[in-house]
Amino acid sequence: MPLDVMSAWNSPEEAMTAVDEAARAFLDTLAGMGTLEEVLSESGYRREQGKWLSPDWIGVERHLAVVSE
Image 1 (tube, rainbow, N blue to C red):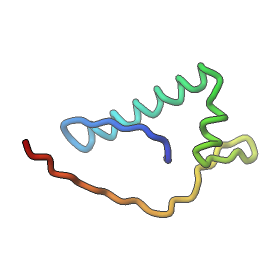
Image 2: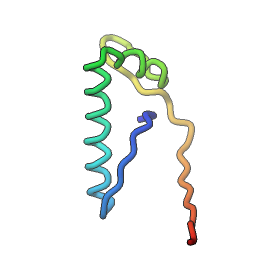
Image 3: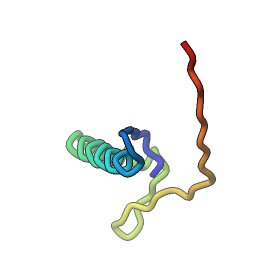
Image 4: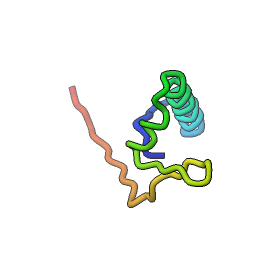
């Protein structure tokens, strides 16, 4: 989903669970604020037949950076 939601944890499985929880909290907050439709539309989602459809994915890249002290 192309929303700016991130999280991290000790294992990939825990991190995925944390991201799911963060995304749900983000969407719940938007709904409570009354801005859910606006943010989804701005993020490329479209509403068809009563359902939100995500935008097509073009690609996914992963970048790593090393930080030294």
